[in-house]
Image 1: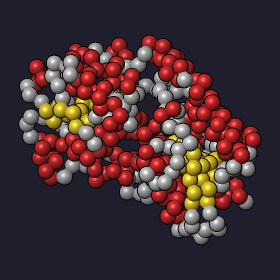
Image 2: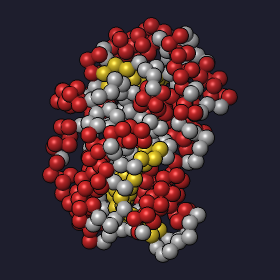
Image 3: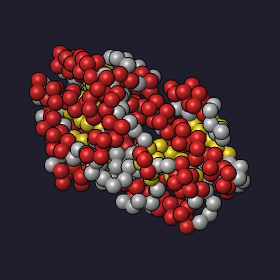
Image 4: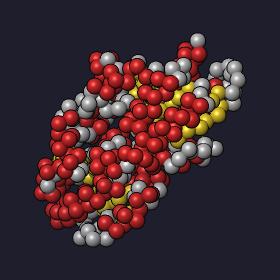
Length: 391
């Protein structure tokens, strides 16, 4: 704990559900480490609001994904950028922390640095410069004092690309290992018939609706090939009704479970998973669950992505392990026949399944799970950055 010199005013802008989680844990850690009163304001979600944080506007207004969705909301996004910057400039905080949501937050950071260069700016979560638009790394350097990275390879990427000072603080998954890792009863269920297989069609409306027909076909094909399977779909709370409506038309219907406790119980007991590309692929890997990953986006987004993406994998677990161990089927490559064959190949014991299990066993060392908690390390860097700029 550091010695406080007066109340600390922290302005946080978080986008997406994951950003809300990071912001909430950072708030807790800052209160512990600062050693005095800490005030928070800005933009956040329900987890941050449970800590007496009042969001300036609903977080979902900036948690947009996909080119067409962003284009449709540009006027409102730019208005929210102007409002956020105006508040920061009119009432300068001691430190500005921008969590995820890079499109929105880079605009905020650039404008604040121009108008109030004395405000220290910390960016929490690296944009995926290692996957597409690497030029963003160098663009960030003039207006970001410190970048907090969730993945171990990101500091070197930013150093190579001329990005801001970057520190690997760790991934929040490391704080949920007990929830994700199976105990004796869970391991017994993982080996028992019928196999429990996770169905994870994404956390965004567009992902769910685009992948639903494919998933419906895949489940039917796999069950016809292997026999009865206990399919489990952990529902994203704000899309529960949409998921139920989609699943109602599937010939083979998964069990829909609600809440984090049910989700993590399913992860601990699962034999395998069919997943949409995203952070969930790393959660599955940490749980030791072999997986098959697919993804589909709109035609316009796909055309743009093909011209911008610089990586050969869309699976986060593959990036972290530096090995294409998880099979992935993107856009037109994700046909029902191919995806079903891959999934059917990792449910029973065999070389394909074992290759993933062995690779996932390396994650503890690669991700430094035995080290300091990410939120604790992140809070210390935020405070150090504030003190350095204060002078």
